[in-house]
Image (tube, rainbow, N blue to C red):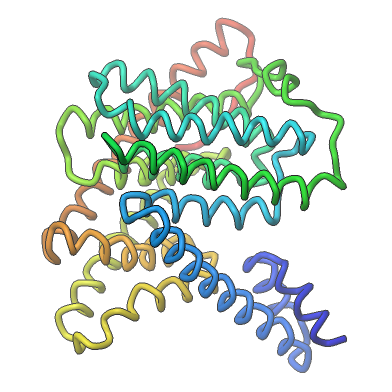
Length: 359
C-alpha cells in the first residue's frame, strides 16, 4: 500500500510536493521527500533514454524534436487542452504541422515576412493549446515551436524531419486519447476561435506573447546574432506570465543566466575532464527539485552550454548566452511597456476593461 501511495504522490508537481513537505509534521515528511526524489529520478532517466533513442533513430539533426517532444509528452501526461480530446488530436496535428513547416520554410523568408509567419504561427499554437492559461501549456508548446523552427533542415533531411514529427504526433495523440478522453469536455475546437476578442485578457495575453517573441526573433535574424533561439526563450520566459511583474522576472532570469554561465565555465575549467559528462544530468536532476525561477535559469545553463560549447567553444558560448539573454530580456521589457501603453489607449477609446498590469 505504501508503494501505491508513493506512486500516487509522484503524480503531483514538484511545487505541490515541496509544499506538502513544508506543511507535513516532522515524522510524516519522509514519504513526500521519497516521492519527490523518485519522481525526479524517473523523469531524468526517461528523458535520457527517450532523447537518446529518438536521436539514434532520426539523427542528431532532429535533437530539437527529441527534446521538444519529451516536454510535450510529459505535459500531456498530466494536462490536456481543456476541450474534447478527439478535437485535441486535430489541434495537435495543426500545431505539429506548423512546427514542421516553420522548420523547413521560415528561415528562407525575408525578415519582415518571417515576423508575420512567426506571429501567425505562435498565435495559432496559443489558441489551440492555451485557451486555459492556468493549465500551463503555453510555455511547453511555444518553447517547442522556437526550438524546432530554430533548428532548420534542408534537402533530404526534410523527409527525416517529417517522419520524426509524424512519430511525435502519433505518440501524443495516443497519450491524449488515453489520458483525457474520460474527462471529455463539451467545449469543441471551433469554440476556441469564437472566444477570440480584444475584451478577453487571454486574447490580449496571446497577442502580447506571440508578437513579442516574433519581434525578438526578427531582430535576431536581421542582426545575424548567434543562437537566436536563446533570445526567443528569454523573451518568452519574461512575457509568459499573465500577471505582469516583468521587471522582477527579468532580474531573476538575467542573474541566473550570468551566475549559471560563469559556474559552468568554472566547473568545466577546474573539474577533472572525466566527470564533466555528469554536469548536465546533475543540473537536470536539481531542476526537478526546485520551483525557484532564479535557480531554474541558473541550472538550465548547464544543458544549453554543454551543447553550445561543442560549436563555439567554452568562453564564447558563455558570452553568447549572457549577451543573447540580455538582449532578449531587454527587448521583452521594452515591448511589454509599449504594449501596455498601446493597449490602455485602445481600451480607453473602445471601452475595453483595463488590465492594470505592472511592468
